Image 1 (spheres, rainbow, N blue to C red):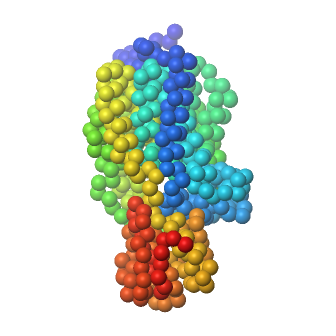
Image 2 (image 1 turned 120 degrees about the vertical axis):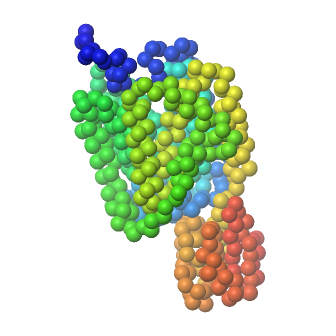
Length: 462
């Protein structure tokens, strides 16, 4: 047995455990943990399938139209438009498209829903194994019902795959560091999982950075893991080289968002007023119970630095969903609190109920009227008319139609017979010009309504 150095306390030794060193009371049996994981995954999948036939959103339509429904499986690896290509996810969706020949919304949503449900179920199983059945189910519902998850896990985008990689990769890392051995198969599995996360979204590199921060207190561990992180990062970036290079080379505007850090915290801790009030204290209590663990403090510091850097740099495109990979950590913190004070599970029920009830009315509603607008465009072309779209409406229409003229200047309107505006906020100047030039207009219904202008009368029905 190796003696501790003078003055050192046992709790100061580097660890990578979210749970206390002693085995938790009431830990679920293997069968109970698997049951919790399966139940949470099935419940999440059912919830995410509500309204899964609604029209694609702006980013998803761009993904399907530009990178998925294309002639070559190589297209996801060599194309980029507006930072939308999440390369490995686009490639997987291209396989689905090639196998089915379909871009139906439900077909394109199968993979993201499956990945999201798997992330919820895997987290519930992993937490239940350590902290008990109630804690496992708490972690699952906190992750699965968060508004960010309800939006992104149900869309044809790669965020659910990124979260799944973060959950599985962290679980593999913890298992490797807690064990006495480093099985090559597990190490390779970790590198592969994290490479998929990086190849899906550049913020997969941020997940690797938090893993590095968690082990930063032990130089021997860092030396052992640095080559693995480098290999995972390089393997993930390799297939995404061309799209990433084109994205980084694109000129961006800088926009400072004063409240961005608060927005990230709000969205991660409930994303809904009542849910935030219920979950934020539980997560803070969970964090407080881990305050003596050096990896937790280092990881928290690394996350704060990354959010702060993104905030201060102020890139043109910056959203709280970029930090969706932190949602499982929030769910674990809440679960740790509930494991110690089961009565506080009532607050979790309040939060989840508020999130789901608030979201349900909009789960099946089209965000943009792109599908309706595309129908008008198709009818115009059949009639020999010249259809046009104002600016970025062409992007939200990408999965439905691309054979139209993009209007960027009022003078171009004279060459159009139909002009559709299916995405907001609209270019107010161009919309006013279209309203002045065309005798007929038609409102296009959606969560964010659009409008169509025409030289002939318009109806929504063919």
